[in-house]
Amino acid sequence: MKYNCLFIGAHPDDLEIGTGGTIAKLRQAGHSVRLLIMTDDADPGAAKQRRVEAVAAASALGLTASDVSFLGLPDGRLRCDPESVGKVRDVVAQFNPDLVFTHSSADDHQDHRATHEISQGAVRKCPRLYYAVVNHLVTSSFSPKVFVDVQAQWPSKLAALDAHTTQANRINRENIERHCRGFVRTCGIGLAEAFEFDLPIAAEAGSTVLSSINDSPFHKLWSSLIATGPLYLIFSIPVSRAVREFSWPSHADMDGIALFRKTVDLQWPEGRSIIEECRCDTPVAEEAIKCGNVLLSGGPISNPMTRTYFNYFEGVRYVNDHTMPDFRNVSILDRKTGNRIKAAYVADANGTKTIERDIGNLTIMKNPCNPAHTLVAVMGIHGPGTVGCYKVLTQPTLISQLLQICEMPFRGRGFQILLNYDVYKGEPSLIPESLHVID
Ligand SMILES: [Zn+2]
Image (cartoon, rainbow, N blue to C red; front, side, top):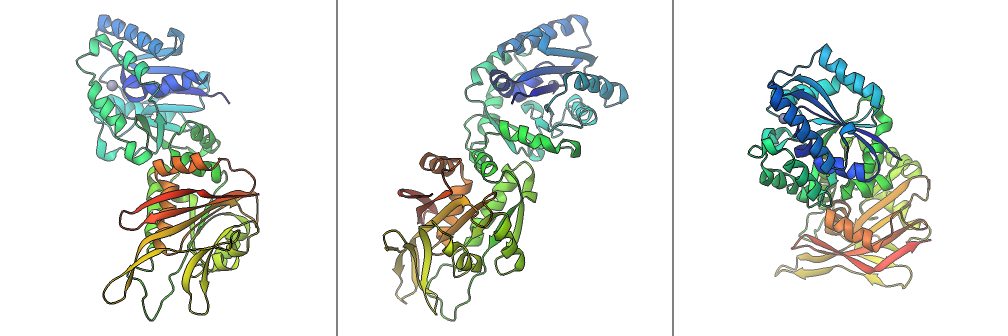
């Protein structure tokens, strides 16, 4: 699909600073790109020069002069009023954008904030993405959720910045680069342009367009798994025991759920509305597993949905197993070989066992109860292994490793993979040779 992408900036150079890499990337991908610059300098000579620079910058990003429009409103005195909104609305009506990029409101320049408001007033039918102009950014208020990988477009972006020769002293390339490198911990992308986002009610269909430009590995993985929401997170209830056998808290897997929620908050454009959380021992959980997208959390001891459903799914090779009636000697049973895979423990002087290494059992498959939906199951022999599975499903480098081992979209009905979880380091490592394709 080819999209019409409209980029709105208050001044010449704002677009190159905030979203130059994305402009070049979308153009290279064959999308139709239009730049709209709201204001002109009050001095006619300067205004003319800056328009020339804007066109030269656009050309460095792969555009031509006809892709750049100027509204000629007054620099420094831009206001959101019927005139300015009307002018942008005319451009929107003519270009019919599928995506609109404009200034973030987390900005201390009044023209930038006015452009943000004007764009909101003028664009109602498609997703709006908000970029940061570093020298005016109010960092504490900027909360991007869409990340575009612009490593390949970085030289074009720099060339576009260079084209603004009259602004050479004002454009701080170091700050721009530091800003774009700053999202690596969130999304794992070395140089990213990051965008806040909102979706007007008339534009809900636009979320697919948005997914196609979002390079966040977390978003890519999960949007391929849950094309249609919501995701029912069926969480386990720890069993209470008279005598504790392990020093690790029995609700450790809640740490994994917390990590998942946090990652959704930071990287899922629509936010946590995608998740419906339900306790494993409720009718809602049973309904969900029968018909929806499910994230099944925890093994058969603490999660009755794992015990009654998952452990009986056809084609599943690894299941968590235990002795009855005391729910002890927990292990992962490999149904293919009959082997039991165990965690590694150390005991202190009182005989209390601590887990050194747990095993996580990660399953991603079509929901056997309703193959139109996906079932993801995360379970350790103990809680830490479950946390390890959540890390694999949320952290960018681990997601990349998972995708290298397992084909996505997955073949057949899905797959299972085991991981070692070093409890002291808090690090999971996938075990490639354990990969089981569920045909
Ligand atoms: Zn500006």
